[in-house]
Image 1 (cartoon, one colour):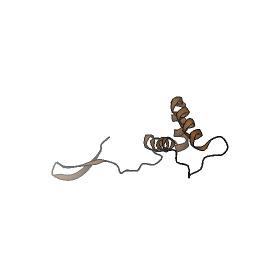
Image 2: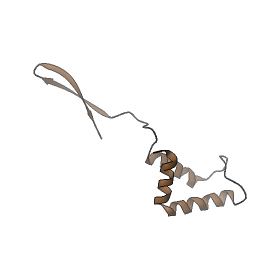
Image 3: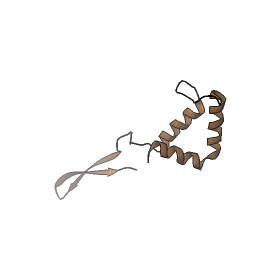
Image 4: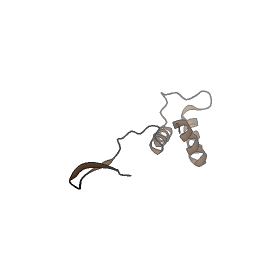
Length: 84
């Protein structure tokens, strides 16, 4: 799912958060112009960061694996186990 799709999903599931964000935008920007990147709206910035944290578009970390060294009938091999 895209970041924009995740944002819309979050706003549909949390209408009270959407109303607070709209109020924060209206308080800073008003009704006579559109917001731009120079506007400082901490509540909206937090929502954007939360959407990125909630459902990242791409995995940002490496896979956590446990390397287990085993001996099986005098045959030495490695196994990888996914830790979730």
